[in-house]
Length: 539
Image (cartoon, rainbow, N blue to C red; front, side, top):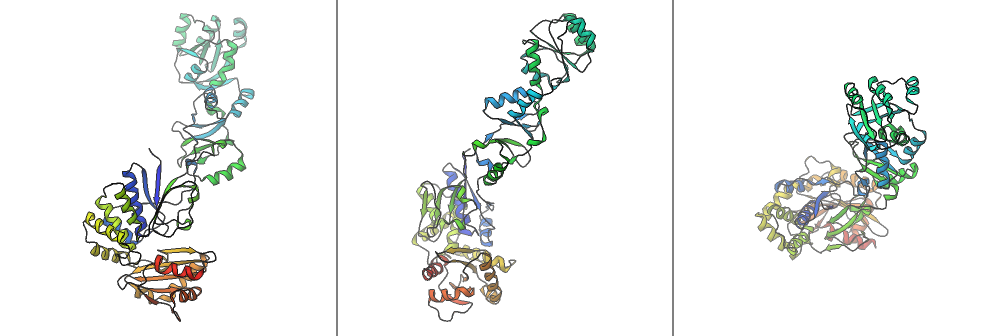
């Protein structure tokens, strides 16, 4: 599958940003990309009404696009089952040029990490007298063939028949817990099968007598035959042991695949390990990352709609790869390492630009997509009455309304009625629903906007709202905050503000003795009728 592309609008998502993300994601899918729309915050009532009307689910919430462990080119599916042999684990490490391997259970749950250093320590200081492994591990490790098999698992004490037969039988009392390495010492073999030892390993590809084989079958004695001599067999047999036998408690440290890369850098600098197992939330091992692999990253691919400023965008944007920007606001501070498609137009809505992209790519606009695109344009242009409205917006509205088969003016009033209801919202929620922060060289300020049919309810409690925007100013360390209460029927806005904003508003709009709740006739656009005038005064 192609790598996912994340498409999202700004924080405090409005109808235009959410619907343009959905519409653009659909266009990208039609063009063969694996694109998905996301939101960066709680959507408002108006947007919920739009999505419900056209049968769309609310896009998933995207907390950040920071680099995670799963975004690195780590060694995926590099692990070994706990019942693999030590030799198999070591061979895996050398074949894949790694110095450690995660050991997993039967359902791939992580158990521990075994390193080449641990294997080397075992070869020097290991227990050579006992063995616990599988029958099949012994066949592989000793390059052996099956003679008889009664047990899947072999556990016991290792004994090599180095003495001559009479001496061996005088000194060694064989039991059912013994693993015997022997050549053509037939008397010892006879004694072993009669005692019912756990396993007989016949070296040098020598033969076992038929009658001894029959006794072995009667007593359920496992027998294998190896091409190796006694010395080599005794040397290699320990490598057939289960790799889980080398597990200790000191290498249980793991990384979750969703852990952030910058946190990993801090951790690795302290631990100074070379190998780190990667797991998921269920402790299922996903693979292994080496400290030498961290330079190979697959940054998340993103497309920004309806914004191009870092502060309005997702957390960790600097760690992602921006593929494209589609916006109708002023150029912000976002920069990229490589050239990208940057579609910025002086129109009333991002959806107008997305509409043009559909036309340019000759992609048919589905009825429901046309509906949400139309909603975004109607919302941002206040049904084509905002001064930001262009002829391009009007043409898009006409065509999209035809495709969606709706009376856009009647629909817009229903949409605004649903979206401007303040019922159930706290004053804090009302203020913060559509609040944007702006910067000049010397100042930082915010302008919050409320589109409502119930402006009187807010003006009757204007002092309470002023206290809230004062708190916003303090918490966000701003120079001042302005609250625009826009009456979409009268086509104007009432202005509330913190004390520090009064002189800038008076100068920007040539008002003498500005008072709280002042009505600004014809002012409905924050982007075009408020912010630019404030910016000019602050220069």
